[in-house]
Each structure stands twice: as structure tokens, then as C-alpha cells.
Length: 56
Image 1: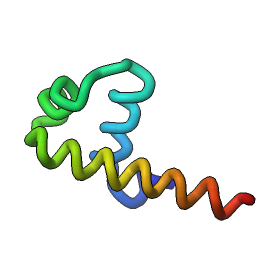
Image 2: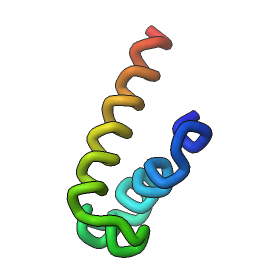
Image 3: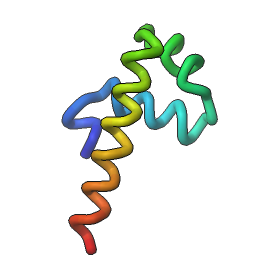
Image 4: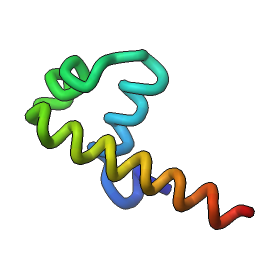
């Protein structure tokens, strides 16, 4: 579970996916920079893709 690895990345996914916030809005809510939010978002997407591929 992503939340077990990094709760901030998991929170970013929740904010982006479930509330529809932009990267900038989510970064502000989490108190992180835009660049960090972009890196976290890229990691989270890759992590999720990897998890989905394991199930196939």
C-alpha cells in the first residue's frame, strides 16, 4: 500500500484523484513545493502502474 511507503504521496493521490485538485492546489494543501508535488505524483503513478502489472 502506498500509504505504508509514503503517506504524503498517498495524500497527494487522494487530493488529486478524489477531490480533483490541481498539482499546485494539492501542493499548497500539503505544504510542499510544486516541484516536489510533481515528483511525488510521478512516483505515485509509476507505483500504481507497477502494482497493477503485478496482478496480471
